[in-house]
Structure formats: structure tokens, C-alpha cells
Length: 355
Ligand SMILES: Nc1ncnc2c1ncn2[C@@H]1O[C@H](COP(=O)(O)OP(=O)(O)O)[C@@H](O)[C@H]1O
Ligand SMILES: [Mg+2]
Image (cartoon, rainbow, N blue to C red):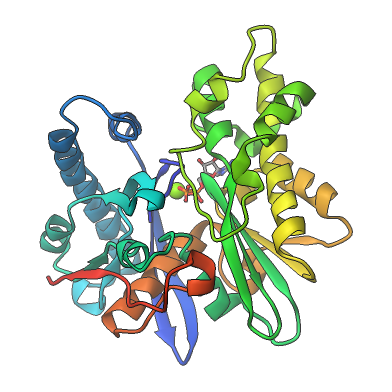
């Protein structure tokens, strides 16, 4: 899995048995700066982008293959023991309203380099059926994180945050609430030269700038009723820069961005996910202690727990979800939730590149 944060690639070996799943081994590789900056550049229309995306797709596939090699070697597993790789690719455009979403990498090359079947392109079929193609992880949350007697909410805080509400009777609501880590990461990179604000410490040194927060919260996406999904197309550094004035201190802007993520997640819970008993967080943002602390204040008295207590460490939930999506694809079982994505019906997702 490589998500909108553009932090790198996460890989898991996962075993599915009797309706249970178990993460057996994990590995991750950070994107080198060169790959990350080219991917970021390809998010907007630019010179010679067809050739540049084909070239970066090859580089990405080599990096994915390295990550898988590391994973297998840590696990002392041979490629023959792996049924398939589910690989999301890197989103560079997400425009369901125009009928497309674009995740790049070269699946044929990944199959060639690893000798393992690759399942990919999970989102297009849902969009072809009129859906958002996203979020897809709610189906996985539903399959493995539901409870017969508790109404649960799972908040995945990646670059974008997405919410899944799973009622005890199995009714599921899921959608992207808006920015998760992405804007905070971009601002930290610009001012600290670091890829993210470790534990939200820099944000905690600042104060919320209320006029800025009010302007950012006015984005119509936050009030839009689900199904909805978003990405860097809407919430980018360029979007933020439009609202800034030079006299605001950088740490205060960072604190405001943290507040934006916490408040929009909380608004989304209140507006669209009523009646839950338990909240779980996952994704890299679950390690941003200041963000989780702020979310906890907003959600009190409901206690916020990590997905670890449901059996999967926060860092590996999304990678596990794409392994499951691959399993669904190769066993020709539908994997989208039409109530979440807005698709006309259940669809089998993914394309297979045989090894
Ligand atoms: N210790 C930490 N403190 C603050 N933020 C963190 C920490 N660890 C990870 N993160 C955040 O998590 C992000 C990666 O999360 P991830 O779930 O991989 O998102 P995505 O799916 O969008 O790639 C990083 O970019 C960073 O913002
Ligand atoms: Mg990531």
C-alpha cells in the first residue's frame, strides 16, 4: 500500500483462514526524495506527463519489489508461498466526478520482478458502476472489525482521513472526511524540512488561528453528504496557501491544520455516523499523539482506541485491506460496498497480472 501521504510503501504478509485474517509479517520502505517529489509534481498538469508517469511507474515498481523482497526475506518465505500481491499503486489523480481515478505503477513489471501474481486497479470498476471508487477500506473494516453487540467507528487517518461506521446489525457507512495528515505534512516539510511533525509536537507549540480555521472549514466538501471521497485534488498545499496571510506564525498554522483535521473528523462523526459506542483509529495519523489527544477531547466521553486492540496494528490496516481486496478479486467475490461508494451495485474489483 502506498497512500496519499506519499510517505512510502507498506507491505504485509497476511493469512486468511476461516473468515479470520492475521498479519504475519510486515515491512516498509520510505520513498526516496526524488520519487516523492516527482509523484507530487505529477498531481498537477505539467510538461510531458505521460512519459514521466510511465518512467516513475517503473521506478515505483522496482521499489515495491524491493519492499516485497525485504518482507519475504524477513519472513523467510519464498515467493511460491504467496498467492498474490494486492498493490494499490500511487494515486496521482482522483476525479470520480469525471469518471476516472489514476493510480500509477507498472503491475506487469512487479509481476516480472517478484514472480508473484499481482492484483491491482481496485477502484476503476466501482467508478465505472457510478461509484466514487473510494473509500474501499470500509468493506475490510466491516469484514474484520465489526461486533455483533457494539456500534463501532473506525477512523483511518492517512493523508486523507476516512471513516467507517459499522453498526451491531452490520449496517455500514463510510466516506472520506477530508484532510488527515496531508496538509500538516506539507506544512512541516515547508517549514521544518521534515516529512511530518513527529507526534504533533510542533503543532502543540502553536495556537489555533480562528479566522484561518473558519475559512478552511468553509470548504463545501465538509458539508457534502456521502457518498464522497477526496484527495490532493481538493486539499493541497496550494489550496492552503490561498488562505494564508504572512503575519501568521508557522507553528500556529500547523496547530490550525491539526485542528482542521480533528474538527472535520468530529463533524463527520456527528453529521453522518450517529449512535456509535466505540471509536478506533488507525493509519499513520494514529501515531500523531497531539491529533489523537485533540480528537479524544472532542469525542469525550467515548474513549478512542487504537486498531491494535482489534488485532491489527495501526500501521498495517490499510495494507491488510488491500491484501483482502486482492483475495476477493482472485476469488471473484465483490468487494465494494455500494452504500459507501455509491456504485449501482456490488462489483468484483481488480485486474490480475499473472506471474
Ligand atoms: N509519530 C508520528 N507522529 C506524527 N505523525 C505520524 C507519525 N507516524 C506517522 N505519522 C503520519 O502518518 C503518515 C503516514 O500514514 P499512512 O497511514 O501511511 O498514510 P497514507 O495511507 O496516506 O500513506 C505520515 O505522513 C505522517 O503524517
Ligand atoms: Mg503511507
